[in-house]
Amino acid sequence: MKHLLSIESLSRDEMLAILDATAAMKQTRGRHAAHPLRHQCWAIMFAKSSTRTRVSFEVGIRELGGDPMFLSANDIQLGRGEPIKDTARVMGRMLHGAVIRTFAQQDVEEFARFGGIPTINALTDEEHPCQILADLFTIRERRGSLDDLKVCFVGDGDCNVPRSWIWAAARLGFELRIAAPPHYQPPADLLARASGRIAVTPDMQEAADGAEVLYTDVWVSMGKEEEAAYRVAQLGGYQINDKLLAVAKPGALVMHCLPAYRGKEITDDILEAHAETIFGQAENRLHTQKAILSLLER
Image (cartoon, rainbow, N blue to C red):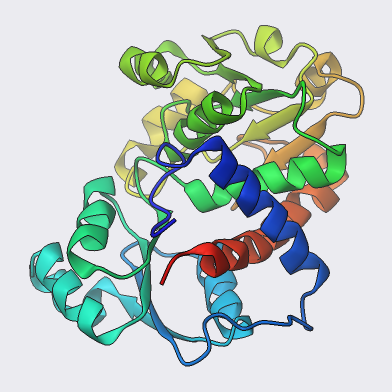
């Protein structure tokens, strides 16, 4: 595996290898026998702000022996219109790898093609692969396996998180149900390409019935702020609350990729009742991303 650009681009075996390596990284944190990024410098290039992604990648690169270099769009010529392929050609001659968080999926893929160095998608408008791999690890860690899994995603079903969930379900064979208003459902061509056991419905109760994982994300993703009032009005009923949890399987996991807007996509009491899972999920970003970094071919 040269790059981690999307869940779509991963095979089942590659995904399971990442999950296995994550378990080892978590178990041996602070006493790793190998430091595969020693004497390496990695760029962390973010056009979108972040808390968990930035901290976990900076800490992870350091713990694997490397040096992270954080670069916002305003720090480099990309912010002034330099083509991504030109930036990539320069970076590829100076750095050992790049972690990119931006808007267009095409930009990450173009950087990987022209840079020639390991490249990781730390979020685009199309996918959020590191998040979903950490989520899968969290589920396996707490549930014991991913066999016979039923995941229910509630909210905006056409943003990067459910899109990555769609590919994860297709690759690993578990059941995914997406509850979203018609205007916020994933496109039919994406579902057809992915295939798999994926159901989409506007009915939250139907989607959550017997689910072992209830998952949500913010209603207003970065870059959609101008649509905030409209989105809140359209998605207002799509909330994880006591009523929805009651129809899920007893003991169901409640997950949120954070940041959470309590009282909107999830109620405060449900978030607090499931805080151990949700903040464990956030912690697992560190271990999963270290696993990815360790597995990339250099």
